[in-house]
View 1 (cartoon, helix red, strand yellow):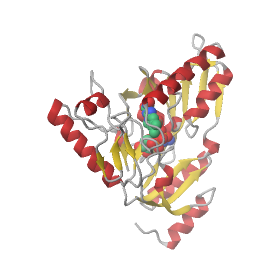
View 2: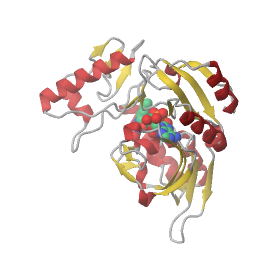
View 3: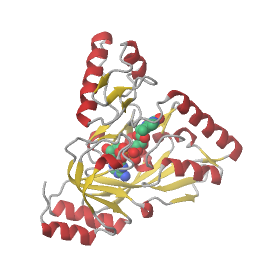
Length: 315
Ligand SMILES: Cc1cc2nc3c(=O)[nH]c(=O)nc-3n(C[C@H](O)[C@H](O)[C@H](O)COP(=O)(O)OP(=O)(O)OC[C@H]3O[C@@H](n4cnc5c(N)ncnc54)[C@H](O)[C@@H]3O)c2cc1C
């Protein structure tokens, strides 16, 4: 999509920081893959976000919000529209009192990284989010993914989600009205998670915590990080687990059992360290990763009868 000079001018006037035009998205994904977006804007506050979303609707401009791009495969052709990121102004953290019988609640701006959230909770002596220690990305992206590890997932501690819709409305939705599944939020605006980030933006979340001893919180976080270090590939860009685990089994085990560790297509490779990580071993394109994905799915299906479903979102 080209964008005419008038639209570019309008967009630049609404954005609170300089617009990156023709912006390579490989720099914004953990896979280090992806062609350019027409524009990329880092949004700093709610009013700016509301103004931009209304502008997109009015001018029929495609847009998508992303976090740190740690669960994302962006096409080689890039994105024919505007990519939004949440800046520091939409990543604040604060502690509020929960209900009479509940512990404290952390209110987190959706742009906050999970790393910062975990370390802030440790400083505050708040327990409940240790399981996300070591998961990259933002808390906004983690809600969309219902991110999880070690038998826990984000929806367990979620109290509320605040979104801005494409019509500019701000709505806070209590957890009781939200429906989550394994690595998916069945969002109330669209019925499939893969369309996430195109109709509305998560701007804040409330997370239930309990007051606890800092030493215990630190030890638990360290042990989770340590286990990741031991099990996951280092130094080769990736997007974490590529496929969802099928019920009662592990995608990594099935891929390894099919003898696919180390399989390559171009620069994309099934990690020899953990078979459910497809890595960019150097110069991989999105087409390489997709072809590798098809080969892996095909062979695992042939061998086990199980059709693996990607966890990674496509853009
Ligand atoms: C090394 C590594 C390890 C990982 N380990 C785990 C793990 O143990 N468990 C796990 O669950 N995941 C894991 N992941 C995947 C990933 O880190 C998580 O899913 C993370 O929560 C994604 O956050 P993000 O901000 O990067 O989202 P992105 O990848 O940027 O986006 C994910 C999706 O959410 C949408 N989105 C993002 N932000 C918003 C928003 N504010 N509003 C609306 N839509 C939005 C995007 O459009 C996209 O569809 C891992 C990834 C890596 C690279």
